[in-house]
Image (tube, rainbow, N blue to C red):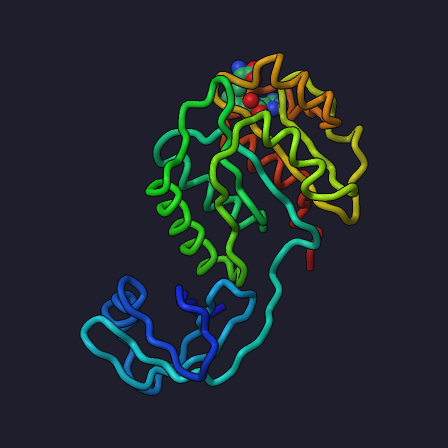
Length: 241
Ligand code: SAM
């Protein structure tokens, strides 16, 4: 896959202008000039072949040559709620979940949560989604939702997403994953707790709402490892072709 560039403006006509960091990368790293062709995407699900027609100090102007809907999504929506870790581990988590095809990341506010992203932190995580999507070829962006309280997430998820929803919490001592046969369709919603873990009260509430509590093995994983391991087990991305 050739290098891809992101347009924050929806590409709806046969011309588009990229500015800021995308233009900087094109001009000073890729050193594009008139006539060069690159791939663009705008998060709508499509990707575009575009030709450079003009460049200025911090802008590159393109003519759109072709548009194609190219689907690199999972076969079903997969939502992951996580009590986010601190610092750079958040970015790592967002990068990996984007690569794995997660549709939506919901930062969770639980009794023992330590990080709750405000608008600026969410904007930084959205930039990490774009960067990972450029690399992995996704044409739809993983949504970073506004943080939700555990009670709201656990109670709303089964209803909001429809009757065919499977809701799974990772919790040490839970049941083995193999006890839950893989489904071929329907929404999956996953939850991973904070460094201090979910409280018994939080787990009880989820069980009451029909969530399945699963173990990820005998070792205690860090938040981001647990989220990636659970997402992989449910998404089974290696079976895609
Ligand atoms: N002492 C905490 C506990 O017992 O829950 C450990 C928390 S762990 C660092 C952070 C989160 O990752 C947990 O809340 C859980 O969601 C998930 N996790 C980590 N290891 C796990 C395992 N072996 N089985 C299931 N979930 C796990």
